[in-house]
Length: 335
Image 1 (spheres, rainbow, N blue to C red):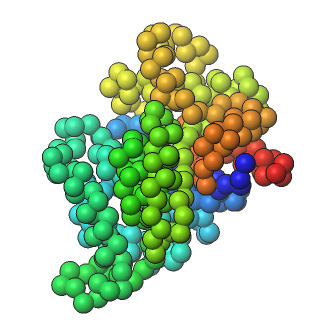
Image 2 (cartoon, rainbow, N blue to C red):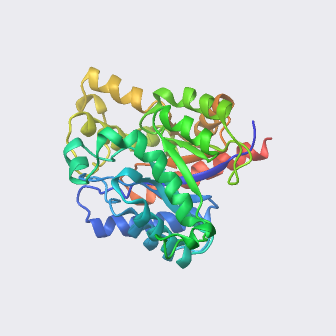
Image 3 (cartoon, rainbow, N blue to C red):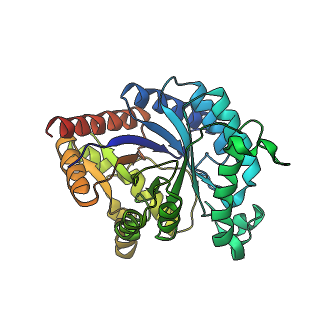
């Protein structure tokens, strides 16, 4: 098993009984905490029209987090590119990179990050997404290049800056694109695990070296809920389970505190659906987390693991990331 980086995905989760201001302060606290634990990057994801997620203005929130930290890379995991003009994103991330040199990542995906009606309100045209998304990535690369200085349309700030672009996916579609463009590839295994194995296979087998990357760089996002004991971890994980039940029921209310028994909350069919979606969720104490990550790595051999941890109690969420860091350190030392 090779060594790998470990990073954070934060959706700026809104909790019942808490304000969005509280949410942002918790995100900053988490970023500072994981920076001290030597996590590689802290990514925020674009979502819309969800009471439970406050990261809709992703670029603004990235600036807030980057300004409150010192060394951890901060970026998008991701910006849903067809929701935006390529020029606007180039300018926004050019501004962020100018403010925080060498610390900004631009992860991009093609999904809407919301429901169909809200996607329409965002101005998306679903008929051209598969054509538009690859073209927009090329536009971003052009806007960031020094060679664009002679163009009629330029990204200022942005031009000539090294803003790394990552391709995000939750199916095999973007694996082909990331391979063709020679860009790093991150898969959303925390909510769409079904095609992850095939996507990584496609990406690795068809990767074309580029000026940005010599060889494939594979990233997987998974859920992690770690605690001092197995019993506590499983109770804490019921917040995550309830959040996914709410998605199944199209109920977007804020995240709920843990419950003693999920069987009081979900039906057998809902349980089956949720556990299928949360196949790559590491729940347990440090020893269990370590074994689950080891098994995952033996299967997927990723370059970077991105941890999403939906835990209601903020201090327990911070502790979860500590335990996961300790588990990864123990794996590295055992090599």
